Image 1 (spheres, rainbow over the protein chains, first blue to last red):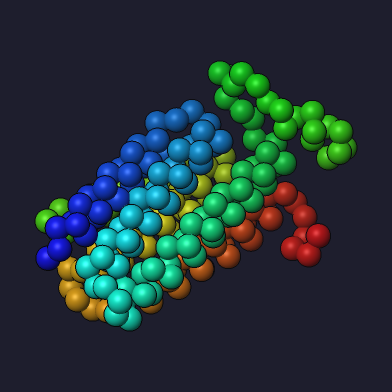
Image 2: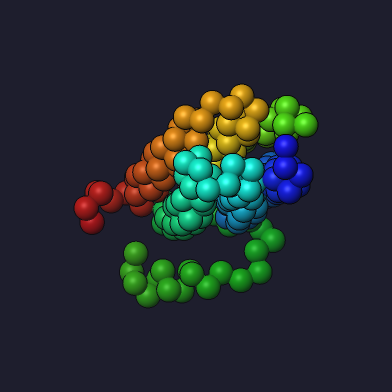
Length: 111
Length: 85
């Protein structure tokens, strides 16, 4: 068992843990997505990198290396689409929000 | 060691289901389902290391793509438009 891969696994699970705590604790959907998507995506990318370190340039290692950009781009794009849909659906921001720049743009477009 | 990490990840996916049950709006539930999909990818990768069954990495890649398609379709549903607009 390679110790570098074990360290990468532990870092990844730690990032996942903090992302899920943010998913439970934060007040509204925008904050939750902002916390959870970034932490969990980077944590899972770290776990995949640990698998690549352990297996090297075999079939499994190459597949893990391919899965990293796939996960990165698909997760960020789907998070963006989801949060835009949530804003257009009319879900309210939390009371502690300081600034909402998207509101004026939204009115200008007449949507 | 890998077993402990696997148990932590499985517990975290139950936390996502807590958010699915509690979530006040539909978008909260969709966020939780997306995060659950990413966590399952991590569980599959750790199962590759623990059991040595190498096909599980293919399951992980397929799960990434299916989760992406599902979440984008549901987000399009939230904007109340058709899929080709």
